[in-house]
Image (cartoon, rainbow, N blue to C red):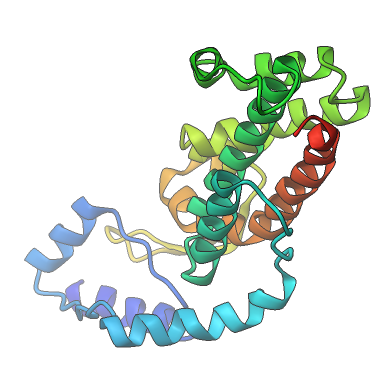
Length: 239
């Protein structure tokens, strides 16, 4: 049976870009003498080369850094860009969500204060401890958000910001289906082709999330950029 399973696995591995094995099953196969090659992690130089190639592809599609940004907002822009350049798309999405939340709170704080000169730093503590939903509603009451933008922000909070901030990987990958997966029963040698919904498989979720991160990262960053450019001009006259 060992030789049969080994041959089946070799055939299945041909043309595959990944193999997922239950850790317990892997140890059992090893104990039966089935060899597994350990592929070393890429070296730092190899990793940087891979990231550099992808960074050149994505760089032209990033929003341009707006001029005259407050230092705190500019720093967030730069951090998001660097995350994307280094392939840290999940982190970039989280940081873009932080940028949106921060600019909403900052602009509302300045608006309610009557301008930067009259802003009391002690009042900022209230905003730092504020939930995003509350901050969106507060900005709307301050006349900074119209109904359409407020609804878009609340939708973004529910669909992107919360799942990424809390690493709700099941929600992030809920629409992913791994199609035509070849499943091997190591007890019988039977191979069947199945579709696996990520929401029902933690192992598929882990494989699917990087693809979802890559899918979301540019639209999310562009939305964050849109929010910044929408809000900052509204306090320009109060500087």
